[in-house]
Length: 89
Image (cartoon, rainbow, N blue to C red; front, side, top):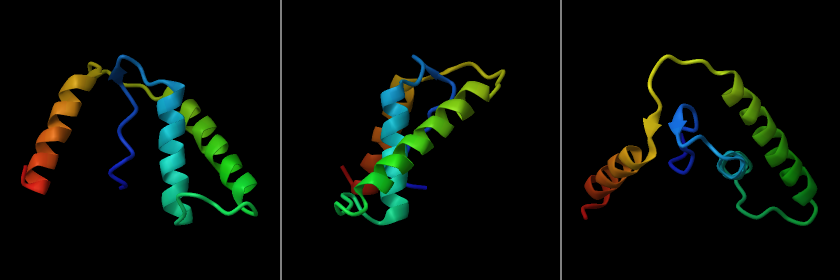
């Protein structure tokens, strides 16, 4: 999985629409192989981002869990620790 796409389900505070759109954008960039589409492909690129963000919002709204929400600060600290090991910091 792309390292820039993070877990969005069951977080405290709740996931925002901006986070969902950012994940959709990363997904479309990864799948298309392009960080910036050409003018000819811009409309298709933007439409794909919006459709994926929309589908993601629906998915997150329908998921059910009994687990307690994950703390964003704890997740961020874990990510920093993994990066430190990965990059030798």
